[in-house]
Amino acid sequence: MFISVCFVSRIFAQSNYKEGYIISNNNDTVQGWIDFKLDESMMRSIKFKTSKDSPVQQYFPEDIFGYRFTNEGKFYVSREIEIKDGEKQLVFLEFLVQGLKNLYYFKDELEYYFIENSDGKLVVMSKNPDSYVDLKVKVDLKYRGVLKYVFKDYELIRKKTESADFSRRSMIELTKDYHNNVCEDGTACIIFENDFKKKFIDLDFSVFGGMQYYRIKFYPDLTNMLESLYASSVIPEIGGQITIVSPRFTPAIGLYGELSYSRVYGAEDYFVQKAHSRVYGIYEYSANHFTGTLGLKYIFQTEKKIRPVIEAGYYLSYFANPECTLDVYETGTYTGNTWHNIYPDYFITSETCSGYTVALQLDYQLKNKKYVFGKVGYYTTIAKRNLYNYEPRDEEAFQVKFGYIF
Image (cartoon, rainbow, N blue to C red; front, top):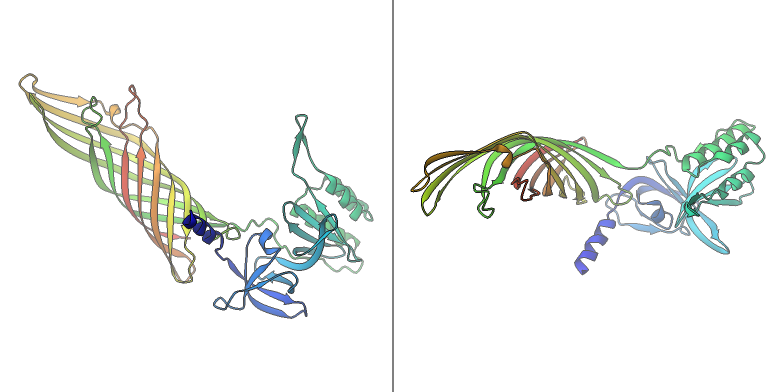
């Protein structure tokens, strides 16, 4: 239990430093690196380093005027707010728009927008989650009344507030339009959040090729499920993968999906000595093999060029155009000499089977910041069976792959 808690804590303690600077209370600027985490965290305190190798310093709203990320379009300032009656708190607000009316954003249990008038007063807006009353959806629209009050001195913007969404895009557009229409000297407003469509999600695409030692189980005697054999082969495989990571949440955990193709085939012969006969069998199969995986990966965070990655996922296996034969030659006192050919559908079909997969991967960073990788993995699937539709699609593979991450 203690080990599990420590491991989870380590995952969420992973850093995601981005270039930026802090602004002191004396208006001095210090360049460095800021840990780019979720808003809920960064609005209470930040972690800052003057260089990637320097010690980490933690700053609270009372310590600095604000901070800004160089490339992410994010700017935060220290302000005192009141979102509950009589309860004031000093926090970092995200500065969205600077103009005749300034726009700020804050996230706690709910999302809040603050509009600052020329007198410095902050007007707060929030929205409760939708609820159901008498089987009808009840939507909290009080924020539209606040917007109407804030922009009451310009009729065109005031009308737009009647259909405004409680979203970052809508709030920025309203504040910007108000400034552009009311400002008399033609000075443009400043939008610090320069791309409100950004979700700050990293997508990595990779392609790979490799070899796998593949085995499929078959049963030479359908009346005896305990008697089973494996037909094995070494076959090539190609495929691709997409990985989704949210560094602000944690750069160590990723969700991945993978597709691959291989042409599987194999053969196995066996000999069985029975009481009154001898049985010799030959099993052969081939198929186009398509696989799909959905899973999670843990990416070890390191400053070195090599980073380890662990993957685990849910695995699907599909055979297209399968072919299979089981030829049995039996000779004995009562049977004489006979050949039997078992119908292929008893042994391999195009039914989808599922299982699990695990893999260990090593990424090597190139000069262009891309990666090449090597991976070893294992997967196994277990077929569904019943007495009337019997298909021994137990399969497993040990894999070696090499690829490139875009």
